[in-house]
Amino acid sequence: MESTLESNLDGERDVTTGRRVGRRALLTGMAASAVVAALDVRPGRAADAPAAAAGKAASPTTGKWRGVNLGNWLVLEKWMGDTAFKGVEAGDEFTLSDKLGKKDATARLRAHRESWITEEDFTWLSARGINAVRIPVGYWVLDGTGPFVAGADTLDWAFQTAKKHGIGVLVDLHGAPGSQNAWDHSGRAGTLGWHTSKDNIAKTLDVIERLSERYGKEENLIGIELLNEPRWDVPIEILKSYYTDGYARVRKHIPAERGAVVIHDGFRPDQWNGFLPPADFANVVLDTHIYQCYTDADHKKNVSEHIVAAAERKNHLDTMEKQGLPIIVGEWSGALAGESFGGLSPFEQEMGKRGYQAAQLTSYDRKRGWFFWSYKGRYADWSFRESVEHGWLPLSFQDTTA
Image (cartoon, rainbow, N blue to C red):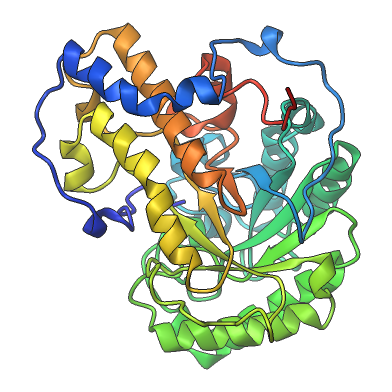
């Protein structure tokens, strides 16, 4: 997840003036989010949650993926939690590991990985009906390339623990050699170099194949995501060629009925018409990431307007889906710019947050699935667990019958 990322859909919406919203306007806007009642979003703390019980893991081929990202675990993101960076002047995992040296970096990252996500977290997620997790990994996860510290043992543990609690796993290649976006969550910030080197692309394909071979027989694998957020200036022809080759590498070890191949839209959601057609490339899923808190247009909208925009996202996702591939929203959150809550009382802000997250859910849950960014973190609007405990999201995500 990119903390300075521009929303990839704003160009398709009218930009309204950034007026401060009054109480009457807020309540009027809330009418657009009757979705709150439909989703039964009600206040509650952990004590109000259903009793823990292992659910049924998401299927790689059918049903919905209702999940969370396990961010800042196997790929560090300092803005989400900086304990691992304590005492070291570093902004990304490469720099941290390089400055610490292999021995100290290994000790520090092992401690972080063992504490950031524990079995209690899987228990908590399962009890609320979450059936999938998206786990970001770097290209170094299997062998600790360069200064990086390998994390295969942690990923092995994640599969085993998720299976125990009825949760499927989507392995997401979040960082590639040379960096596919120049952002910190690719492992190393600064230079966009992945696509400029055939060697980088070849190494990435090798990593995808090795991940597929290692985890292809895991019963709760739901898919392999070939690359997270390749930036908009990575040429589309190079990206499509990589995706085509990546599909073949995955399928050498994972048949279509055992796992999906997930591709990110590269911030070009309308460029995939007829790509990897299902008749020839089975079980491919297109991933898009949606945030409404980064651009000037986002900042000018009040919370009521954001709720309406979120509810209308379904129309955009419908259009994306008509290109031929099922859609997931692989990242989204409850975050809005502070200006969007201007002039509101604390109570009205709480209602706005509930309405906004509910409106998003009604749009995204109509598609193949979704993954909230992230399960936990420093900021409540970016934390699935805190959003549930604050009552901004439902207490349960299990399908129920009347």
